[in-house]
Length: 294
Image 1 (cartoon, rainbow, N blue to C red):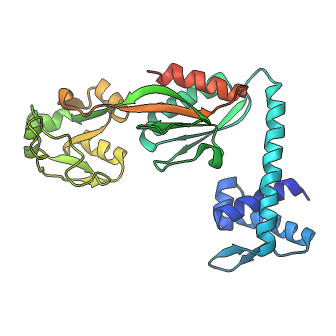
Image 2: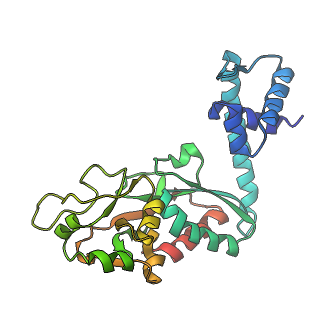
């Protein structure tokens, strides 16, 4: 019985809330997760999890054992980093958090360059627009868009600002014409993002008038879906520049109203403050600044 592995699986199952979610996170089968937990329970002689077809919950013994597992696993992680520091070349696993659109474009490209340069590192890139706690969630680095709160525990390095772009396909513009002012968008088919508050996504005209209502043939909660609709000639799209840059460079989308875009938002790379960072983290910071630095 690999006690340490079983403890790791049990802790993951307790935090995930189900064997199936734990199995997905660890790359195991739900049956294997159950075997690890069962082995621990037989070894300890107590029930750790109460399970039914719909839910699971920790027993009193399970709560106590989980706290001990977390402490032991954290000590093991720290012991492993001591060994990592002895190596001059980056190696091991690196966990990175990033927002979805920026993560699947610029961050993914930088991560790919990092992996080619340092093949002994494996990267776990988690894309999520929700807030993540680097320390609590076990991330080595995170990319954040927007203003930051001050922190004594994290280092923040500025990256290229997050710019928006308004574009349309040449075929659409040939039929509907080029909007020359924001007010003229009222006469165009504008593709809207469902996460924008109504009327708040598009920049307001300079005279302070309300954002003009426009015909919206498509509203979606995903930027890639809006991009594809714009490429097909369905209307005018406003999305992050990093998402549209390749299409603009290829002439598939034409940038519009460039002087009327919102002020770019700041972007930072965050990582835990450490006077002796692991090579894998220090080299990742260098690559990110090289590829995405201001």
